[in-house]
Amino acid sequence: MGARRDQDGDGAARGGGAALREATREGRVRQGLGTRPIVLIGLMGAGKSTVGRRLAARLGLPFRDADTEIEEAAGMTIPDIFEMYGEAHFRDGERRVIDRLLREGAIVLATGGGAFMDETTRAAVKESGVSVWLKADLDTLMRRVRKRANRPLLQTPDPEGTMRALMDKRYPVYAMADVVVESHDGAHEEVVEAVVAALDAHFDTTAGDAP
Image 1 (cartoon, rainbow, N blue to C red):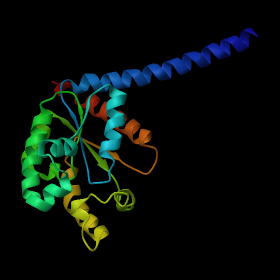
Image 2 (image 1 turned 60 degrees about the vertical axis):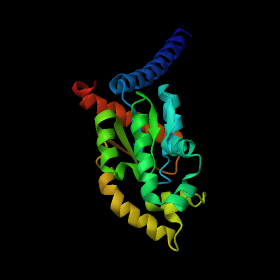
Image 3 (image 1 turned 30 degrees about the horizontal axis):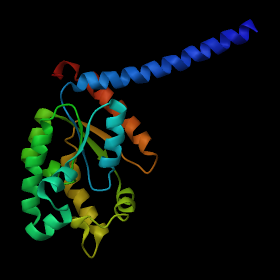
């Protein structure tokens, strides 16, 4: 019986130790982040909003979605903005909204697929935040975006060809992000776990640079 109790005690200690390590890792991420926002970038369908909400809950941070903020500021949907005013007008509003959100401090911010392509926005994210690219392959992206019809850039005769062209153009720029995490078709919590681990590793190597 004594041996059994010792084994049970050892198992509980190991389990408690694992939980403590997890809590400590999230604490390290919060500490490394300081007052900076985590900025999620990637193509439409990469899971920025879904993963972002779960990541924010995991870290105890507010969540903001740039596209939602843009729609609220404009009083219309993004597809309507594109149709009525064009992409250039949308990008100008997007730039201003993201600049405002970057000033909110430690939050998780999901951005639209084209936001990081803007040089001004990219520089602002680099200066004020920590960027995380949720990288997904073509099949994963297409499976996800086919579930929604509100993607203005994919309203073409060949949506898959359009997506492939966007990947070719944007992925080299997304690769400038501070952290890169694969976004796959598994459970969203698995991607959140990978983001937390990647941020922990990032802050471990840049500890002297944290504000």
